[in-house]
Image (cartoon, rainbow, N blue to C red; front, side, top):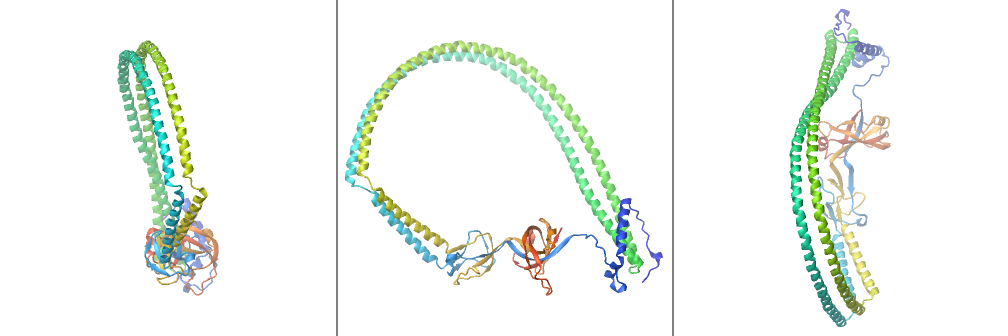
Length: 580
C-alpha cells in the first residue's frame, strides 16, 4: 500500500506566525499517536501494537444519562380524606386524559347523603335553640311596660312645650341682633364698596402694566423656547446618530469576532485533519487525491480567515472615524445654540426689570388708597362688634334658661326610663345559658358541614388525569388512591447522572433528549440539581448495566414544543445528553 513520495501534495497556504505556532504544536502532538489513530480507522492494515494515545480536547463537551419523563411537580396520587377510608365511590366525574382545574370535583363518596341529612338536622336544631333564646329575652308583662312608656311620653311632651317657649324667647333676641347687625353691616358694606372702587381703579392700572409685562415676556420667552427647542432637536438628532454609530460598531465587533472565531476553528480543524491524512498518506492508507483535497481545505480555510479579519478591521476603522466626526458636530451645535439662548435670556431679563419697576410704583399707590379706607372700615366693624356682643349676652342668658329647663325635664325622663328598664329586666344568666345552647348548636352545624365537605374529593392542582385507580362502587384505599394527576402542560425529564459526572452539571445547561416512543428529539435546560445520591431508578435494557450505580437526579425543564410531544408519555425511559 506504500505510495511514491513524489505524489505527496504541496501546501500553498502560508499562515501568519501565530497560526504557524499552533500548527507546529498540533503536528507534534498528532505525531506521537499517529499509528494508534490508524489502528482505529483500518485495523486490518496494521500488525504492530500502537502506543497509548494522548487525550485531545473534545470539540463539543457533553455527558449522557438515562432518564424518565414526568409532569411538573411529579405525579400526584389523589386519595380521599383519612376519615373516609373504607367509603365507596358513588360518582366519578373524570376519566383518563381529562384536564381539571384546582378545586374541581373529582369524585363523590357514598357517605354524602348521610352527612347531608346530619347537616339538615343540625340546622333545624339551631332554629329551635334560637326560638328558646328569643322567648327568654322577651321579659316582663307587656301591660306594665306600656304604662311606663306612657309616663315617659307625658314627660317628653312637657319637655317639648317648655323647650318651645324658651326657644321663642331666644329667637326674639336673635331677630333683634339680626336687625342691629344689618344696620351696622350696611355701613361697613358702603365703605367696602368705596374701597372696592378705588382698588379696582388702581388694580386696573397694575393689570395693564402686568399685561404689558406678560406680552413682552411671552415674546422673549417664546424666542428662548424656540432656540432651546431647536437646540434640543439638533442635539437629539446628532446624539441619536452617534448612538446608532456606537451600537453599529459594537454589533460589528461582536459579529466580526464571532465570524473570526468560527473561521479560525474551521482552519484549525482543517490543519488537524490535514496532518492526520498526511500520516495516512505516508503509510499508504489513503489515496493522493484524498490527501490533496485535505490540503486544499487548509488553504481555503486560511484564506477565509485572513479575509474576515481584514473586513473586520476595515469596518471598525470606518465606524470609529464616523463616531469622531459625529461627536465634533454635536459639540459645535450645542455651543452655537447655547450662545443664542444666553442672548435671548439677557433681553428677556432687561424687559422684565423695566416693566416690574412701573408695576411696583402702581402697587404702592394702590396700597396707600386701601389703607385709608380700611381704617374707616375697622372703626365701623368695631361698632358692629360692640352691638353684637351686647345682644349675644342677652341670647346666652336665654339659652342658659332653656338648657336648665331641658336638663330638669330630661332628668325626670331618665328616671322614668330607668323604672321601665327595671320592669323589663331579663336575668343575664338565663340569656347566657340560652345563648350557649345556640352557639353549641351552631358548632354542630359547622362540624356537620365540614364532614359533608369531606365527602367530595377535589383536585388540588390544575392538571390532567393520568390514571384512574378507583371506580364507582369500589372502596377508597389510600395506598393506591382514586386518581393520579399531573401538570402535563409543562413536562420535565429526570436524568440520573453518575456521581462522578455531577460536578460538570450546572443550572441552565442545554439538554437534548431522545427516545424510541417519539419522533425527533426534545430540547430543554437544566433547572434543578438533586442534593441526594441514590441508586439508579431508570433501568437500562442492557442486561450487563450497573443497576447499583450511585447517581444524582437532575431535573430538565422541556421547552413548550417538546412538552407538547410527550404530554401523554409520563414515566417513559429516555436518553439524555447534557451540553456544557
